[in-house]
Length: 438
Image (cartoon, rainbow, N blue to C red):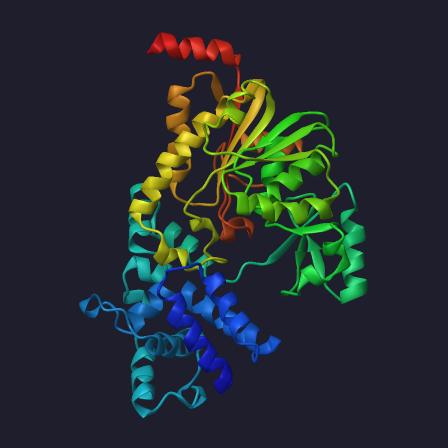
């Protein structure tokens, strides 16, 4: 690491470790403000910062953070990172580290992680480990999950089926950019890219033949089962990655609503929508989950996807700062939103229609617990088996139960959760039953 790279890394880490903004935003801002950093410098700085954040519970322990509950300095964390994660010997440490630092590094080399608390070994927050233990997860399962989050996530692409075939896009990327890809094992539209090339500079991206999308996210489309001519809603559309997938599955027919409470997120959908070639998507800004626009669509939707706001703990490979930014209180507040959103979205589903609830979290409180609570008060819905749905789509995937529960170590995706629910009673009848019950 050059002195320039090291200085930039320390500056970015000092800002990122305040946890006042997402780490990727902190990194991007620093790069915008420091034009002297070249592409190689930026790559080294970004990779180091994100790797430090991924390993933060371990680095904190190695640097003595347990003593007096005091957070080690950025220099101490970086020293621990070079010593134990990068496995540099004392002679290889950057010149900024003096004799005293090297003496500390020697001490760190002698520390045994096997003697550390479970949350340190798993590189997860203590509160998350306690939640997983309360769910019945074993120590081995927690270690497996946590350690799988320590690697950088691969770059997955989704081929836009209304514009191109997967094999053709793979051949194009190889020909024009020497980009190697492999077919994703589960998604019929996915390509996994070797390395981290700037895909957004290539025509395949600029002309809408591919979008960046984790394979786990792509599988949500298969669970929705959206078809030609249907009425479909993406209830928490965000920047619209799943909206675009659903629109392509519908072959640009029918009507697809993209709802969100954020005007900024919906505005980010516009250029993606233009590239995609879709004309069946209707972005809709709503004030809340109980907006009048939602009420007017009661009982009309064939499919409603609720990709609920969540802790994002399943994306720790990409967003490692969430380990420090999320808390039991923030998750509890999200739980209240999740059940309210699911309740409201369910009203749009017609008899025989599908309601798909999804998160990018591995916490039961955001997943099974929400679905269980919903089904207890909505007997008009029944849980479908995700394994059976995927099998009909010719996707052979190992799942523990009827839910889609993906993890990096088992499926090489982010940690996704999804439940597929089907309405068996018309909306009017369900409303009457609810009134009678009260």
